[in-house]
Length: 175
Image (cartoon, rainbow, N blue to C red; front, side, top):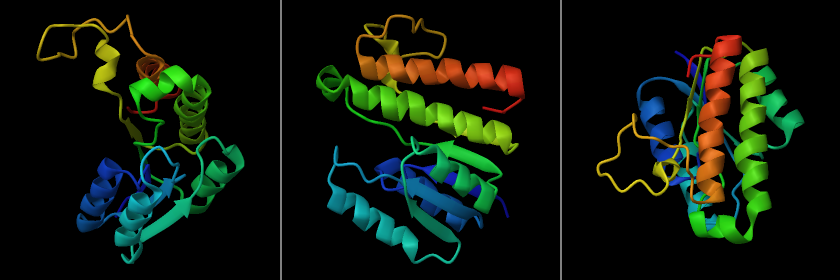
């Protein structure tokens, strides 16, 4: 039974992924900062559906808080990490760019550093279709150019892809 750290477990995808992993017999450690971009009540309700499972540990914490994140890795020794946490929203990024720099870049770097130093087997992370920018060809393909983001949100998600590629190359983290 693997121990899997899932970030963003109070989000829609994070909650469903955690349920699926638990149903598959894995131990899940979930972390979420319960930010107020979406309904905090809804996030807490999602978290409550996971909290009753004996193989689930929920943590309220921020990926930008490196001592807390490091403590999670030291205590639970996750074999794998699924990073679904991010500051969402294209429009919001126009008015609050600092939120994206902090959550999507600093938080992701902290995840990469913890994976590196704790020899995590694999990191799965969520990017976004926003990285395709002004691409008008549908459907999008992974081989489409993604070098022209049209929002700060998209730029941070593209930066995450590049950071993960770099850590994979330099430190052998499977992504």
